[in-house]
Image 1 (tube, rainbow over the protein chains, first blue to last red):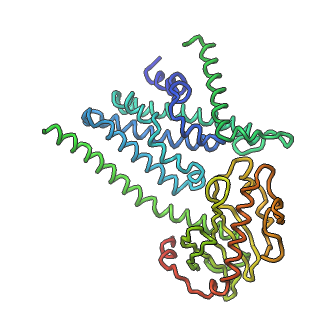
Image 2: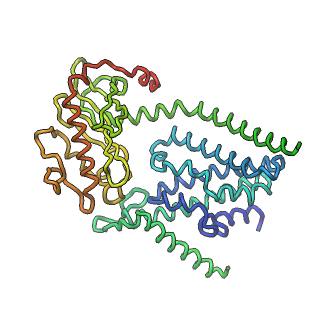
Image 3: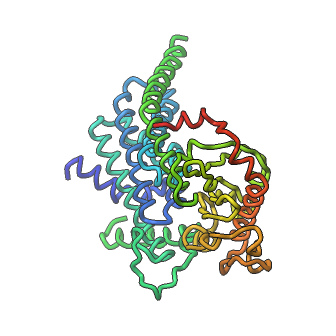
Length: 200
Length: 209
């Protein structure tokens, strides 16, 4: 498989931020009460990841090793602030829902993790692909978790009622414990699929 | 030693570029952010003010302080709705500090004469599925047309006339209490609120598109 293919496959599944690395748990558990929040948070994170990966890769030969972490943090924080301001200006409703979790992208260890593990060793192009792939993987996990919790806890799917009037939503799934329970089952499913594919 | 300087210089450079970038973003987005906030405010005002006003209520305001509106007596803006020279009513925010988790921010509209025009919950952190019925259902409609004397203020559990929700009494109790305090404030100060000239030209100028 080509290198690009490997990077994409790593980001979406094999080395998925959530399924394999179990990083970024705070926003994952915090905002995944419905599918739309999941998509919004995932895309915001992807944008930050893409930007920080490209910039870190561009400056990787100029930043001395001793100060690379503070430099990366400044780069990441800048992209987070840009995302925050842009969403505040043009997507006010989503911004209000995601609230504090947008500024908190800055401490999402998945992003610093990619800067440190990938972008500082690879070309800007591969780093950009890696950022998109990892971001999409995170979006996938957030959306899957959000959609499951929304379906069980509110009886809706992307805000549309699909379960009919006789369905009694289980509130527990929108509350914090529900996030852990559903995530556990999703991880179980992921491991099961991996085992079926004869890996690990 | 030169190493030391190089490290510091690199970080300074990174910081300076980042600052310039952020200043640029702020310059581009601050206009749209103010405009989006203003539209949101106007939308909320249109929903709570008595119908038919033809002024710009977000620019016809007075600022007051009263512990009944905000526990810590922070300034609260009163938005006035008028049709020509007639005072139709006013809208203002009240904070219910005694919800189940955190403050509940409520926008309420009162008609001249002291009846509730409408009540909207702007933001809250109540339990999803229980307390959040204050925004997801038509529950706030129960306030419409209520005055201090034509209804018993309180949830049914406390002997009042307002419904509570199964499993969530604290949230509606807090909202009913806050709206009642807001209404009492309005009735007491109504004459003053409408005669005071706009004292917030600065704010009004800031939100102009």
